[in-house]
Image 1 (cartoon, rainbow, N blue to C red):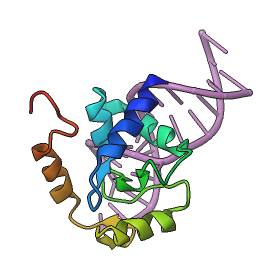
Image 2 (cartoon, rainbow, N blue to C red):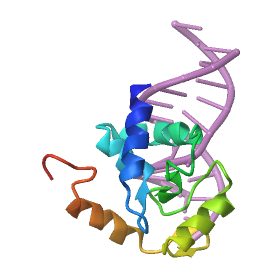
Image 3 (cartoon, chains in turn brown, green, orange):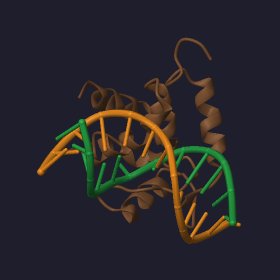
Image 4 (cartoon, rainbow, N blue to C red):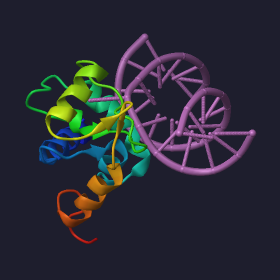
Length: 110
DNA sequence: ATTATGACCGAAG
DNA sequence: GCTTCGGCCATAA
């Protein structure tokens, strides 16, 4: 699907040490209702080393799933400097706020 | 066309 | 805070 290609494209742009959410990516695709589908797409990630989908978490902060296991996802997030508390990203809102500055997802208008 | 299944979301309890 | 439930959208059978 052309949509999945865009998903991977966006995920690649998430800076190391930061995170985004399935919902934010769905919004960037133009349809917030696609959040679930975004997860489905990432579930088919054949190259987790090149597509850093460990940076994509749920909108409530829970880390969510990962091809290599949630534990590995948490491990990589922490290694990148993202704090995790009880399977949840600490201060997720700060990260999302950061994306409003960077024209990564909301290019065009704010 | 209908049904079931997901790395989800939001509102309620 | 937490768990539960209905809704969402694409894909596969």
